[in-house]
Image (cartoon, rainbow, N blue to C red; front, side):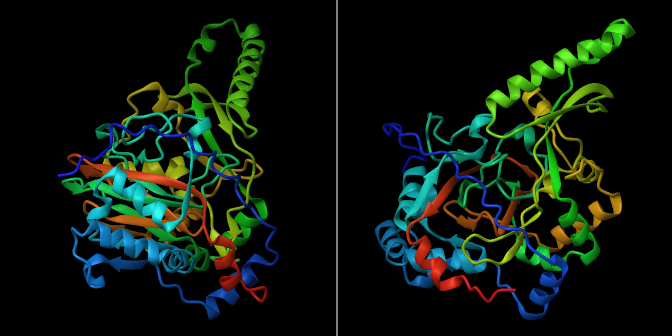
Length: 394
């Protein structure tokens, strides 16, 4: 059995994740939705089975040759279908083979978009490693990771490859959903409200300020101003996007907290290669109300350290208004209607377009070892764009 990792490899640091491509505003968003609804049917995802190619599951040389020779066709499938599920390849059962896989495809690795905010652990435990852990911690096993596109502030990978090195004994499925279909399935009134008002996320909560209540009342507001100013300067110096801090209560056990909100952004964007409108909104993972609803099914989130508490999130309209519970439930229902639970075995890979395909993770029991590599782009991107993008799109 080959080792999961190669202890002798020293990694060069990949480039930062690319800036998010928000694109131009989409005029008459509901009319666009209805035109696509009447003319479009998506096939999601594409699947490639090693056994159906006439290649033995243990013939890694032949598998790599197939990947390399068919790289453009596989990447085109990723663009057309949103994701490609590859099954039965022994090549990707360890990190060196997985890296050969995406190198053979011509994918260009980048740093995790969380790089400027916090350090996601790598599979081999080495600095600058391009393969990251995909939320395998035992302490997070009962946390259902809601559907989301991967982006932090101003940065979003163009694509990703999720690999299974060891499947959990129970559960732990990798979840995918087609953002284009979610866009089509949204209630037009909800879609119109969201797009006109935009959205913004609370990306951080600092629940450590109950002591302020013990300060004389006349000194509380000046003290809050000083704390907010210091915290704002520290956070904005660390991240590469503007953060707006707001005082609130609730958080953890009703604690007084500072909530950090990211800039306003659109919930739907046109895909940078194909031009199709796609749902690019993390309400399913970021809404505190939807997470509370899931606690009734899976149990309470286990925030066992300070970092976990700080990383609590929420979502609002772009003008800071609260989103109606009925609209949240609708977005949850539309999202879950489109979720596919992908049970991955060792060596299986899901290659996905980060703008078209949302991803998440089911709860699990046992030991789970999945990894992910993020990509800033790929070889042949302009050629694919010229063949798939149509100026005649509505």
